[in-house]
Amino acid sequence: MTKFKPFLFALCICLSKNLSASSGDLNLHWECFIQPAESFIALLEQHPSRRTDLNRWGQSFLHIACTHGNKALIEYLLPDTTHLRAADNQGKIPLHHACAHYNEDSVRLLIEKDPESIFVEDEDGLTPFHLATQRVQILKILLEKIDNNHDLIPRLIDYASSNNYNESRRALEFFQNPLPTN
Image (cartoon, rainbow, N blue to C red; front, side, top):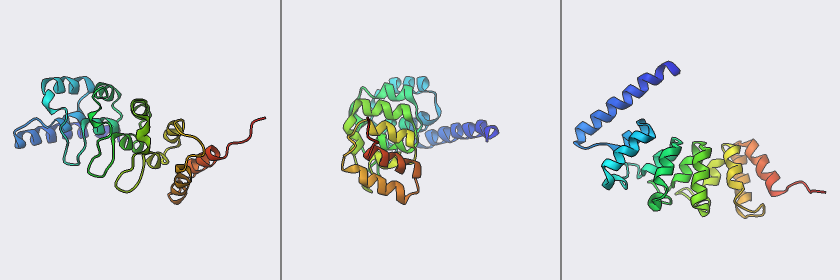
């Protein structure tokens, strides 16, 4: 797989240049995906009016940075809270993307800025918690923000069980009914 990474990177650059040339405009969403954070931040500085652009899936640069775990870019974009709870075409906010792609740093940064975003539902009624059940480490970060008797816990246990996320199901059951301390 590693021998294909340079090829994939070159392909992304070619696609980016072709898309930019065909549209007659700089395609910043592709650049966000392929550029190092510092280079992309410099591009945004050159094109400040494009900071609020969305791609065809309704995703902001913050959505993309969270999907790819680009901590430096997230830290740069977070002071502007415009897209913190902005939903893409599937109703997912950036925290949904960070949880779905197992980006612990991204999750921590986002919930530090907006703790209540952990309860935002997408079009399918899924919260970031539901997506976090795929990876118990992400789930534990979110569980730090709620009580063990929260009414969302039984729904999450059912969701984890129906998707065979057994480690997360066990963690949720333990969270809901912790062992007594002496």
